[in-house]
Image 1 (cartoon, chains in turn blue, brown):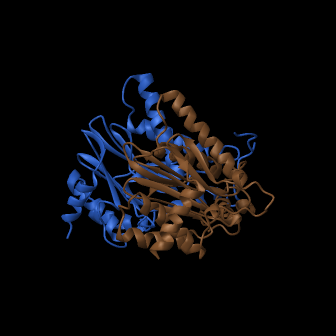
Image 2 (cartoon, each protein chain N blue to C red; image 1 turned 90 degrees about the vertical axis):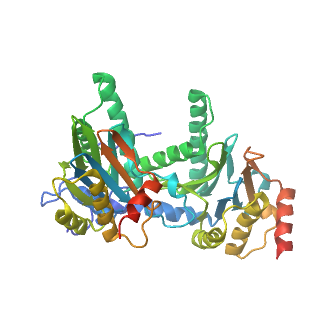
Image 3 (cartoon, rainbow over the protein chains, first blue to last red; image 1 turned 120 degrees about the horizontal axis):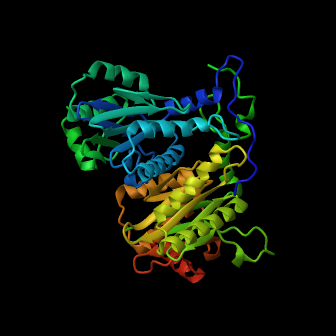
Length: 234
Length: 246
């Protein structure tokens, strides 16, 4: 199928020293659906909006909060197709690690490797950067982790963060609400409230997705469980 | 904010524009309408159907060789909308992928897996500058023994998802509005109802009464899960039923 690659990178420096393709990729991320991550004492929660443009679309044919390993999960803001590529890569990287070292991949290792892949696409020939920012959460060594990976290949550990549309408002909201001794349940509650700030319409178990990570591992909440949390909000 | 473009190439190859858009992908969507055709697919309780126009522009053409419906596995098929060359290529790749899967795993590739695989391949063209996105959209229909009747659609952006009903081509927006109205009221259509709904949708948005040789229909259902295109006489039966209903 492919062919002669471009032998030069398309992401080049502007006179002011910026890599504009990466800036544009971040613009694509900021136009994407909101995603939120919050670290609690005993776990991490990821949540995202999953609005469909039409009632003809099957809500549950597409999954945004994806499982990478038993104890690591991720979600994104930005371009869906690019995200799928990174989910595949993440899963492969995790499997390769566990095959070589005979133990589950530590979250920090996965994040470093995935971010390196994202960086490659900003410097290799004939490709554009990924148009997604990832939120990766995991539990290992008896503590929770939450990381953000950007199209540039940079990664940041967060206590709580928001990405996508209205992320500035989301982060301001989280700055006010976040405390160090949040429990997982409260964190889920806060994550849903953060999404609600920018949500147009009625939230339900079918148009938001929530994933939780704890010592028991990472799992996605069922629509019914999400609905229960929503019922507890005024 | 960076002023100007990235040397003006963001419209020529798949790199980001200042607003974070991919112009080449957006243009690929426009290319789907080049042929001037529309396709519709929908599913009911036990049946999935896809319908498309059959325009034979020249009397000298052999009409039996003009088709947009292709079988991918025994129980899975697709309707292609858009540039014909790109469509045929994408079908070839899909058939190859499905066959490879069958060889490796000893069972037929499920429809959602095949659609996801085709979408992932489409995504590669949106990220590599040396290849352009394909100017065609693939709508797959199949009867899955776990998921029931399925309609999946993928597009040049690499996006895919499952639908209750969908359309592609020139009259896509009108067809989707029509289908939304119908599916808002009811979703569990019977076999004949599903087929007639798809045909009626196409007839309504094109404001045309079809003759059996102007439309192609393919169907899969619970009692007949093999993907097959209907013969002209079967199509005629449904067209007559539609005319009598009105």
